[in-house]
Amino acid sequence: MKITTAEEMRAIDRRSSEEYGVPSLDLMEAAGSACAQMALASFPGARRVTILCGKGNNGGDGFVAARKLQEAGCAPRVLLFAAAGELKGDAEAMFHRMAIPHVEVRSAEELRAEAAARFGDAELLLDALLGTGFRPPVRGLYAAAIAAINASGLPVLAVDIPSGADADSLAPHSPDSPVCRADAIVTFTAPRPAHVFGNLTRGPIAVAAIGSPEEAIRSELQLEAITAREVAPLLAPRDADSNKGRFGHALVVGGSAGKAGAAAMAGLSALRAGAGLVTVATAPSAQATVAGYASELMTEALAETPSGAIASRTLEDSHFPSLVQGKNVMALGPGISRHPDTAAFVRAVVERYRQLALVIDADGLNAFENAAPLLDGRDRTLVLTPHPGEMARLAGLPSAKEVQQDRLGLARRFAREHRLVLVLKGWRTLVALPDGTVWVNLTGNPGMATGGTGDVLTGMIAGFLAQFPGDVARAVCAAVHLHGVAGDVACERWGEQSMIAGDLIASLPEAFRRAKQWAGVRL
Image (cartoon, rainbow, N blue to C red):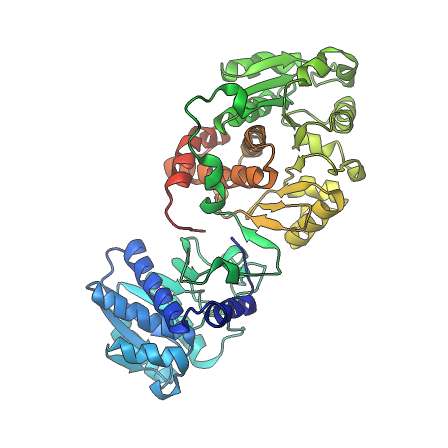
């Protein structure tokens, strides 16, 4: 799903009407109807709804929502933060269609009087004051209105975007800026950058289709949001005569003494993601632990160093090439250790086995500290999955802090320069492609900040690439999205503090079910 700027969104609306014949009033009618539907679905017990409307099109959406809520049996109250005579265009037309008594609020004094009367027994507030066309800062009456909403303690549904937010911002909004808090957001046609990066709500963000043709939705940002819509084609029912050979054979190379669990979790995650077969090649010190983790995993022992890590002499053994034969993807790095001899092995594997789709994670990435030019994805499938610390080492930056200051720009530049797929993990995991397109993941939660969740993701990416070697970008995006959904499922059951990486693997079946069944699109 494309992410657009506010100006691009205005152009989409104009294009929908002028080039594709969709009346602007129809777009507003659909937007307001979506607001009402979101209010009814997300706040089912709220019947007394106070709708705060500005004088622009955002207020027009609020007028439609008020009418639709009344038709649904609710008791809407409308506060218009302007004189009715100031309304123009579609907003004015929808105001006259509303036929619901309203109160005009034109000063801070009137706001104080009406807030007590209109907020007192309200069960839900609809914030339809300022839309995505607004540019901060907020001053005067609207700032006072935002303050009153934030002080009310009532649940808030934001129409299009929380009032006061800069729709084009790529950074989380500052707590010091006057932005309306929101328990849920409903926007239209496509999200803007702030919906994705602004951290504007912990609740749901819905993107409602309101009638703009797909051809009208254009953007030069090269930013896309990963949604269930993109994932669904890879989750279609399998043919009745399917067999394991049709879904790829993934090879996980990793593990060492004391770090066997990482390779084991990556292997099992690849199976849970749908790979037909998975083999884990590891140091003998780790093999028994890996084999005991799941009986479905095949294991192979490689030569090891005295410290129990995979040794570079593995490549001199004819066993390793025969092990690679027949596999269509390799996950390299989970639990593999930073032993210098192991790092040499990793670099040699990356150079030698260009015919395999390759996913590199953890200490597999650390093997390329000060050697990032060796990571060349031309004429091959190469996927890197660093967290910010690993990304800093790859990019030659002092620390993860510098990575976090420009996650989007850094991921895009690195993927372009090295012609590979970069999965930069963290809040809003990014999937950067060689052409400069960046997909943003919107699933997941802070409970996933625990050891091993990255190994689960590595295995899932390998599992999807094993099944869909010709659809690399979508396979990686599907793995990232479902990894987050599994984290959300696990959080519901175990909570943010108690969930562990294995809980994500256990939650994958439910994550797949949700991705298949979600109707429409949600962020």
